[in-house]
Image: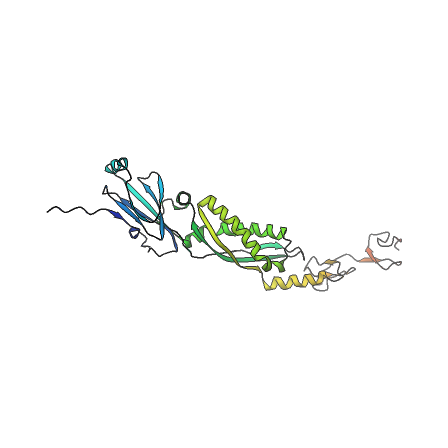
Length: 291
């Protein structure tokens, strides 16, 4: 009795990394197969799209559904000479937050106090594939799979770099001091998100969505030091100690906080009582000759 040969069906489940359809933390998986049937088909789950490369040639994007491997007689003829197919399955919506953060603090000079402090920031974002062909060429290559953790490791430096550049631009344009970071977090977040999304789409075919800054700020120790400096700025102090940064009064020879010498001894004008450099011949305040 003649038995009809079973049609070849290529499925997502044939991936070599044993990923499940609902594994949203996998950004793509590859299924490779050798065609043995002119009527061969491949399935694309409802949750995915597929970028299909036949015989190592051109690629094409397919939506969810069941599709024939061969679309015309020419392809069937090529198959008889041997044809392989690569199917790159990509989830439509990974919807898994990816963490980002500054591994080293950003060196920032506060305009209000003149002090340099370290700024740290971290947050989350998620991604989706906006251009499968670009994504295939720039990211997939010969890889069998690519997880969101691998994506984080590979692209987090780009995220932090763009954030840092935008942070400095925002602080300059908005005249931000250290005590205004949190109040302007949303503005910095939106600007950075737009820049990152454009960069990722142009270079890798990836949309970077929902970029969020969960924290941006300085340490409590730096904050206390800046608050102290800000208070000193509000007094009649005329300068800062070159050794420890504490405020000093006019005429101070030694710093009251660390004891370091802050200026040369002064010659006191007998007319106005102001201090002048010891090399001065005339008072810089009233013009009288110094004895």
